[in-house]
Image (cartoon, rainbow, N blue to C red; front, side):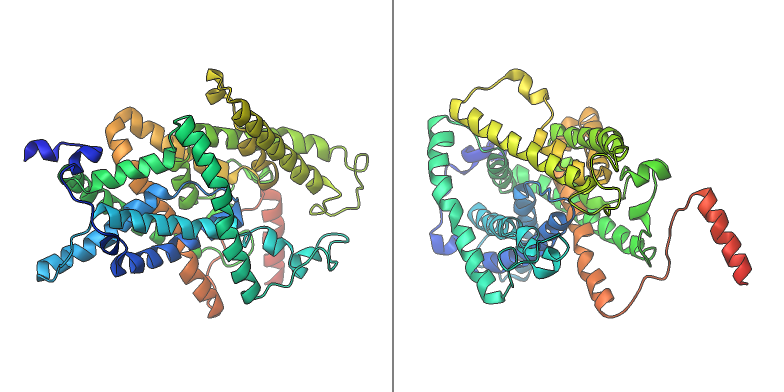
Length: 427
């Protein structure tokens, strides 16, 4: 019995019969999938509307699915009402449905090109508000569009699977990690670890949600609150270089590889620290001095199109590498151009958040690598879910006309002196 408890992976289930598909796709797995999918859609939409960086949520979906169903079945078992035990196949069904749903939320364009074609956005671009450049969105059209988008992957995934997985025997990192997680959760040894993981996830979720609620009280106006805290001073803040106290991106940073986070930070330093200040000195020479900062014909055009060019170049490079299948050992130390490009137009605030997440994980691995491996995904998932889900009650409060009571804003000493003088004169 002890020997079976210590077995890992498929070895632990060699004597277990695979249940029929009706016992894999169950009502409870579908209901759980729907609830967690709603949560993950809020998370993906928040990430999509801010930076566009959405990490692999496979492990988080598998862990949350296990936590929800296991809590439910444990309660039924105590009452003597449990008819069917929770299996790893059900866990996989939940994880697949959640990832598919959140994947549609990311790839459907609802946070990018669909909104970009709306008349409101098109009117902000010179000459963009024309019939060929805009699309009036309707619910029926969007359902049809999402249905088509959801099936596009089938035409590409089959040949890619044959080439990359069957022919070259390459592992799918997030899928493999999720499979190992699900297997470990359903072994006797893994079940004990899972209880601790779920406990940590719940604690980090509650802490992240409570901190987001606390921050809300200080956001009564524009540029107010902890998200506008000039961590490194006002001048770096104006260059979008500050820590915005986002639990979401700290959690994302713990999930993303070190190279991704380092590339984001390097891209922020190169662009907002060196390149854009230099180009701004060319105002009136390289572009008209009368243009607003948001115009694509001015400095914003340099930001956007430089980033797009870097992304396209990186994509072309990877397509060529995939075809000729040339792997260099030094490549894993080279910054990712796609990640370098993102801060070019967004700034470095989220890169700092994610690097803090990396630093936490690095310190944890140095102290206890096994514990970091076991508990870091749970901690990161809780941080992401708690902070992102605060968007729901925040939106309800906004619709109800409830405003935060305080505006916490940071001013330079010169501006603060003018404000004090104005207020004293008004009295």
